[in-house]
Length: 247
Image (cartoon, rainbow, N blue to C red; front, side):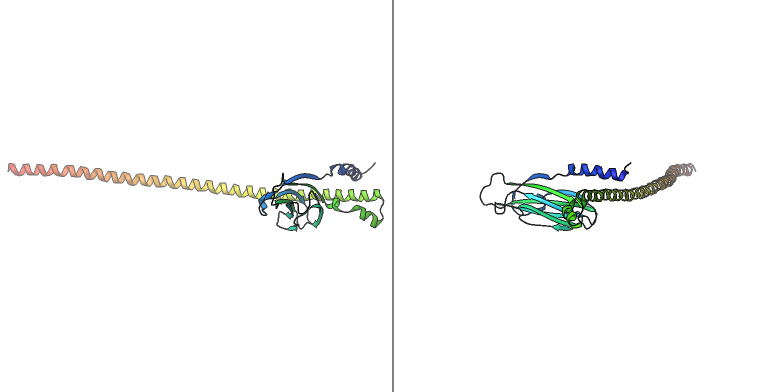
């Protein structure tokens, strides 16, 4: 009975050719100068130290009133290629510097001085990464491999890349989980601190209001006492004056 790895290799041998296709789209030309906001980008992810081959087939020709610029960069800020005024079939190969997404950007600038009807260019883009980017025909000829051996070797490298990508995703999931747990722990202690602050503030308000009430009650009592004394004093003065008159 065939092993699971052998079955996976055979499955990939028949499925991967069906998944290989090029992306086709049109880019409208815009007047003016170069602008990053006018770029149209295609994004893909690549692991560190992987070979990437970008093949772009662009319609038109140089000097037709349009200038199409191409820019290959990653999310970290590395520039891998930046050709100007490209046309026809162009191929660019590079090795990624880190695990990150990379962009293949196109910008079509209208340079014609005369009116151009529907200024645009068609682009057929093909991006090969890892084992798919290698020239297996040259490897087969150089190492004198049989076609089946070369295909099995290619499928084995693709399977290894899938395993490495799954391992990378697992490692990333562990990091994200640790970050979530750390954040939850910090949020919990922050909530405890907030609740403690609110309880302390509430207790302080109760003590302050009680002291304020007692102080206001004392002031009111003193005012009432003063008012009673001020009423009693004139009465006693009147009684003394009446007694002196009778004598």
